[in-house]
Length: 167
Image 1 (cartoon, rainbow, N blue to C red):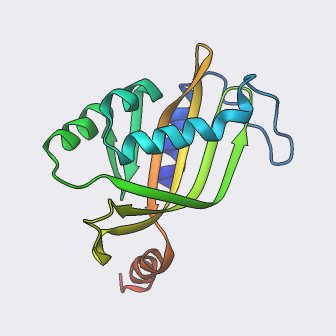
Image 2 (cartoon, rainbow, N blue to C red):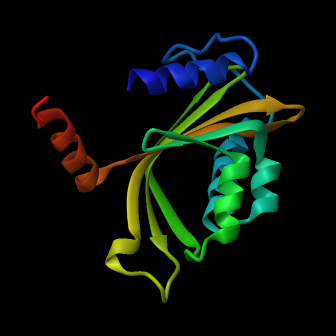
Image 3 (tube, helix red, strand yellow):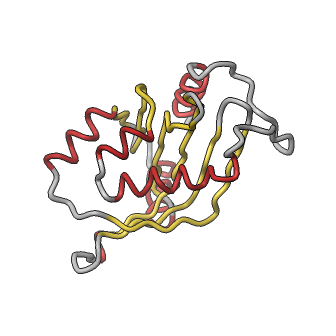
């Protein structure tokens, strides 16, 4: 977990000042701040529909995905999509929060992803915490970092195995 925090701080430091708003002192940001959840939803829609053009438009050049301890670049992710036969997904999120400062936005949400209707099976369902970090690029906000971590019962099961296994 310390490695993940370090990675997030490194990414945030590349976005300009590293000053982050303290809890309860959110700062005013971009005039379109009320539509920030739309940016995150558009990002998730691009991912779920495997829409490479929309994904590129919504992400920074130095975008990185951290999933199960592996970092993936835009090029690697889009390459996977090209060769993938996996169906598109539908996503619903709860327990969502958005933390804001003048130069960074951090979204968190516990999301359930399900394979497209008609192809969905019980194993084609994933629940995980999503952390999406956005930074300004001109007059828009773009995604610079996305982390996915299994949540729900499966996440607890994995954590129990990790933390109760003999060394």
